Length: 401
Image (cartoon, rainbow, N blue to C red; front, side, top):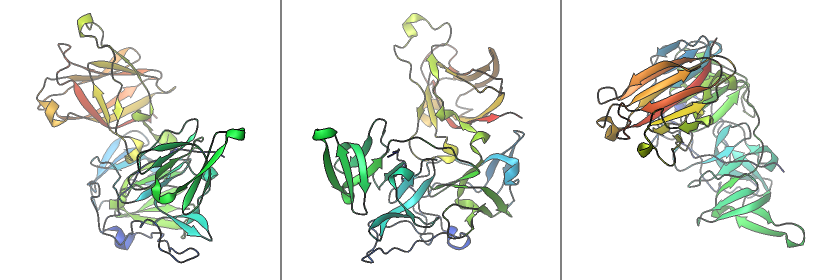
């Protein structure tokens, strides 16, 4: 059996989805025609705490140029883009729904149901699909959290306990977990109603085509996509869809990316942290904190990164030239405390230096990087830690062309 990891919960689709989206609305039933154990969001529902994203899109073309397209105006064709994301930042998640996570990173908002006594996942967007352990990475119910499953599968219980072992089977109403081996092996059955999440050990698989992040927390892939005027995005050839194509209202689209190579989130890279050159011994910390990524589902899989300085972060770069783009923000409590600087270096030379302060709480940064390692430093003129804090929003590496 291959096993995997789990991810988060999601939002109800906004009211605009009521008319324009060709949603794959499921029909529940099963042998006893009972309602599902968890009600999934419907495209007919009104918004419930949905992330407030602007209808304006920030579009990065293949040549690296950035254009902003206001609501109602058609964005550039999808095949001319690397990425596009709605203006504004927010986690694409909300209590009240569950998520099925696939090995390629797709996340299907929905609920577990039964069909002929076998578990089936039903979703507003795709046709009901059989839940097979070799075909999923994890399952998170309302109130659950992502668990790290490395050597063994992890079942998170509602009472806060965690059970590790091998998930041997998953039925609509229970999960069977094997623990131990040989004569010491034991099998335990856990009622589904007592479970918050199931995380399975496994290997990730690559994705192809176009990936769309929706404001309800769904992450869906399709071989191709196109804009229909300025109001809708059409995903063609959607796997498992009841219709050969799906149309999503633009205001329900948080972001799109054309292929995994079109962008890489800085949050997916682990840097080496060092003190800025010349830091006196009495100001050196025993342990320098690495950037902290926010949990949850975020557009372009690029969660906010919190950086606490003074610090120099060294990243292993790509083998080719690339562009680093991000929006640097300072939370209100830190804005009046000092004037730190964020510095980007590539190939041993400084390429960008931006001052932050009460009058510059938000800075849009772009840096041209050469092949190989690069550095991001957050420093203060006097080496003080006071106010040396920043949040990197949608920090992305884009291949240069």
